[in-house]
Amino acid sequence: MKTIWIELAALDIDRANRFYAAVFGHDPIDVARGDGRAIVIIPGDPVVSLNETTGFLPDGHGTLPYFDVDASASEAVATVIEAGGSVVESISERPGYGFFALVADTEGNHFYVHSSTR
Image (cartoon, rainbow, N blue to C red):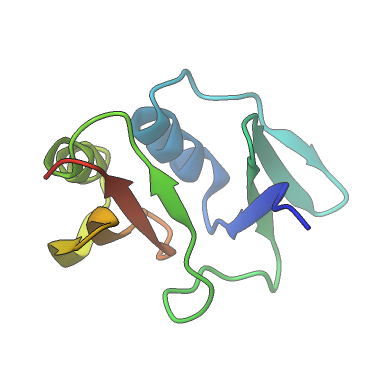
């Protein structure tokens, strides 16, 4: 089994789109709208989808995606903050696994950034 898709809830799809574009380092992606929902599909492996649908709410208390970054953990956290997100748990080291910080996006979803360097 392989993870192919991570879907994150958005209260404001345009705000979420701007946030993830800044954090992932790409231009905002066109929003597909229809049938009472709006969705942004960010290509990758796995795909990350932002979804604004009634009843699908952001959550910081459930599943936690981890995103490996090409920069240091400190740089990744700074990018999250600059994009409007916040730090939930400061950077910490997990010996043998690298450095991690738990952050929140503009919608209230939590996720980890991971790097081999602080």
